[in-house]
Length: 93
Length: 461
Image (cartoon, rainbow over the protein chains, first blue to last red):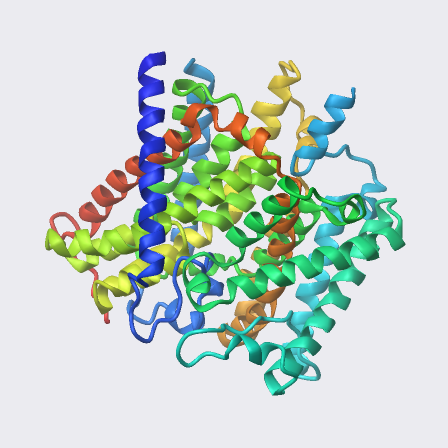
């Protein structure tokens, strides 16, 4: 197990080094850019994105169903997952 | 004893409860300062009597942007910039200075130190406003980099240290950010969005937690939590919230943000290429990007690379993921207060009072701001007004986080960071966790959007 973890960790570090090199190449060559969209990874949260009011307005989709149903589902799944998290954390060693 | 004190200073938010905490302790002061900023934003939009917002350094370099020299030549752009910079400095030095004084600090020392920190944060803002840097990295990377270079070369001067109140700035920024977390967006993409964003996210968090703590045996649990939140929710913003909620160390946050930024740059470019290469439906591809790429800006850009439908799907899914931050931070705070910290103290039965003592109170301000804007401001004044208020707050949040990341850099020691690297275990955690996230999100996106089981949603590009 210890040897596997070491091997996996070393492979992950190698991948990180490749990712650093790739990201420098991407930035140097301005890859991934789209004309008219002047933002990217540097805009961490949705309100950091220029013109966010329009982009995230949900203009492309008209949702159906009551919002209370969504809220109920949200909390049911959240509470269930929290309990699963606690259970697995205690049970597994 | 000294070691214990050092550990507490390193952690993002440890304090004991007393009623005087309401006006003396960092968490509560962060709430009050956050709400003063939010309240001023609200008043400026509702009354239209004054403008409210922190300075934003204009993007410079490249075609169509101001030239670097124009920021300093006392022309129109330059004068407006420096006036706003001065106003921003005065607002922050007053708010944080009063907060510092109420915590028992010495006002004069803070003024001198904060001026130095603000100048450094301003340099960070100038560097990250360069056209390429703004698009790909922004302030967090440069704040950490510049801070680390100073602290590990010439050393952080002692006179600057009173202003290095990382937790204070983070918590205040998070309370302000709470206003932007609109829960009412939960139905933006109907059951499809809720399914892709919310079914997957907690499962990925649990997976990364178990992988980190049980398989890779990483002892630094807050670091595992921060990486889990950054991977499964929305990168830097989620990492900041998780660090504060789990009382993580500053280096943990630096590490998670750094690794998330690097992989986000790569994923933003490679995922649309891969999706096009295998001829994946842009609707599924966009939703996949929305659920997996960490930074929101990168999600929109990568989604749009697939076309209008892909861009819509990506931004809708990410929008829902963005609202999860508050609740996930709340769950993390409860989990750590109940099952991690009190377990470490050897408590068998954890009472409500113990949970309350360990609970990072600023989360209440974060959630309150979110709920007030979601269920009072937006329904009462309408979406446009709520959006206008939120727009005034973004620059304050950015400055608070920029001050925090610069402080983290200035307090970082490369030797400590190397120790925390633990032979690459945290990198392995991120890579395996992100791979699991990619597979699970793709499966759920396909399940919901392929038309095999559920009807395909009608998106307009």
